[in-house]
Image (cartoon, rainbow, N blue to C red; front, side, top):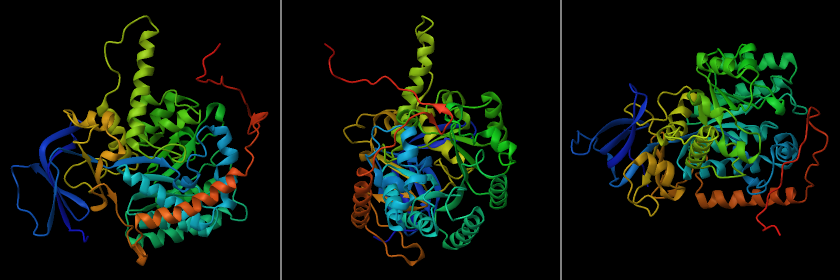
Length: 488
C-alpha cells in the first residue's frame, strides 16, 4: 500500500503534552494530522480544519494515541540468544554472553538478522526510538551489518558504535577512522537512524585511547552512551568520571546506563542536573541480573528508561514502566510500614511512569521534538485499541496504557511519519540505500537460521565457573536459593 504524505487519526483520545505545566494532557475526542514526518495539527474532532487533498483517514474512535516509546538502553544484536539467559546472573553474563567472549561465533549476517529482529520486536510493542549500545563491532563487517539493519528497519535508532580498546588487532585509531567513514555515509542516506558512540573504558583503557575517544566525541557531538555500575561491580564510568574527563559538560547528549552506585551520589546527581545529562534505568535487567538499582527512584528528573538485554525478557517498554512503577511504590511504602505507620498516599503515579518511558527518553537524547504528541513534533505515534478485553471500560487513558495494556493492544505504530505497524501487522523494511525491502516472513526465516546456529554453539559450551573474585577484585557470594516445593 502506497503511503499518503498526510495521515489523519480521527476522533481519538490523545495523550498530549503541556509544556507550561510539564504534565501529560489528555485530549478527548480529538484528531491528529501528520504531514510528512511531523505532527501538523491536533484539534477537536468537531472542528475539522482544511485538510490536504491526499490525506489518509484512520478511524480512531475508542482508541488511545500515545507518543512512541523511547528505550534508552539496548543491545539489539543479542536477539539470537533469546531464552538462553533465563536464570543467568550478571557475573555469568560477562563470561558467557558479553561481546568479549562471543565475537568469533557471530557472522555479519548473524548480527544483521539479530539486530533487525530485535528492532521489529520493539516496533511491534510501540517502541519507536532505541539507544542501541552496539557492542557487536568486532570488525568492519559486523559493525556495518548492525548499522545497515537499523537503517532498513525504519525504526528510530541511535546506533552507538562501540569503540573498544580491547579488540584484538583493531586499534582505537582504526576504529575511530571507521566511525568517521560511517558517519559520512549515514548523513547521505537521510534515514531515521543516527550514529552515536559508546565507550566503557574510562577507568581501564590507556590514557591516550581515552583522550582519542573524548576528542572525537567532542568533535561530532553524537548521542554518547556508557555503562556504569560502581560499588562492588567496580566498573566506573559515572558522572564524576565523565566530568573529570571533560565530557559531561559538553553539548552532546550522554546516557549513563544503570548507574547503580556512586562515589558521591548527591554530587554526581547534581552534575547530571547541571549539565542536562541522564541515566537509563533498566528495571527488569537490574532485577534479573542482580546488579540492582537501590536509589534510582530518588532522581527520576535525570532518568530515562531502557530495556538492556532483550534476549532475557521482552522489549516492551510498557512492561518496564509497570514493573518500575510497582517496585518503586513497594519500596517507598515499605519505608513507612517499617516505622509502624500506614501509608496514606501513593508515592508514584501512572503519569510519571508513562513520562519516563516517553518524554524523558527524548530528554535523554536532547530531542524536544520527540516523546510528546504536540504540533511540530516528529510523527512517532502509537495507537492502542481501547476496545480489547484487557482495555475495555477504561476511563483514564494513562492508567489504561500503563496498567492494563499489552503488546497485542498496539494497533498502529508510526515512525517519522511512516507506518511500521498497521492494523496489528508489521510492515516491510524500507529500501533505504537501494536495498530490497524484506517482509516480516523473510525477516523471521533468516533470523531463525542465525538463532538456531547460535543456540547450537552455546548449548555445547560449558558455563563459566565463578570462583574467587569478580575480575580479581570483589569476592563472589551465594544467594539463598528458593523453590516452590513444600517443605516437610
